Image (cartoon, rainbow, N blue to C red; front, top):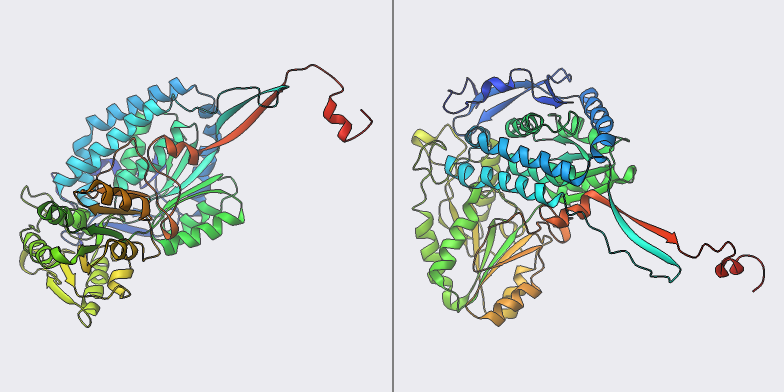
Length: 511
């Protein structure tokens, strides 16, 4: 399916930056030493645009050693110094915004308007946010809680953080993992997905160019089985942060537990989209199409299960299908493209398998096929709406990770919320209603780390992102992320200067 080739300069302007390899260790690019190669494939064309040497365990060891060596000096910097470095980092990213946008579109198949207006500006904003947040690592106020002592709380960096990022948002996920960690004084070794290492490497290079010391940010690009598992199990890695599927997250947890590491997991999702009968129907339809198709549906918070109260159900199905049919598939670099390909042909075939199996028990209202013609070589799949599936069916319960929305009716408010909660996941959800009491009830009773009201998908740097249940635990973004990347120390001072303290008599002697 793949055709060797070289992307033209307008698609891959940063190509020369990767000539020295897909590893970035101690401030320098390098080639992997596993003895095996891997190709970055443009999913819109099926062409291989960059072939590199994969990292082996020796490369992971070198990156961890570099991070360990850099840790004492970086941890000793003042919050103001780390803040200044992150402000410079944000400025470098802003200067290179177009380069990042094109590299992200090339390796992921995202429309350029999405990378220019969402992925890249969101990453720059995250960097600027953590530049400010670095100066606000606060503990509990000092006080005399025992009467004879003064106590206060310190927040201290953990050490070397070994992070693993997915292929769906490689730039943003690299930022979400690296920024809070280094703002808190840690050093990082990040393993990006083998399919999409380009923007993670550009991100690490930009950090170095901004003056962040060598070894603070390191990238190893290898397979999960070899580089990923070695990183998670490494004895010098104090914390593991992983974003990916729940199945792989369980394996990461097993490995991390063996060395008693701090663990942060952001896993799968199956977000419900609950439409009550007083909702603005047009707003809900537009929100459903946008929320289900963002990043070609390859988003763990994407709207995947629309539950629509019966009075609006038929109209919702009809209008959502009609709006989906107006979405323009095409070259990610073309100005008129709304939807790009999936990440790979294998992923497209996986999505198609879910839809094809569902035909036996549900109705495919629109979509449900790969386009032909000029798009046949790419990993494209049409926006798909499925109706009539049972709540316990595969297409309702399993994470598809593609441009597929399933619609089911409900009658009472209680039933709608119960159905929304009826999966193992709990990452994100939305509820649509004009009634503030109804909406407020949904925010209380839907079990998810984020619940939107009358919208679905927007995220902001100041607010946390993370899930419940099989969607993992821990938070990305916001000051809450410092709870993941710092350890809390209680410091207690005696104020009495008395040698023989009264409590000693509980151990020896008499009162």
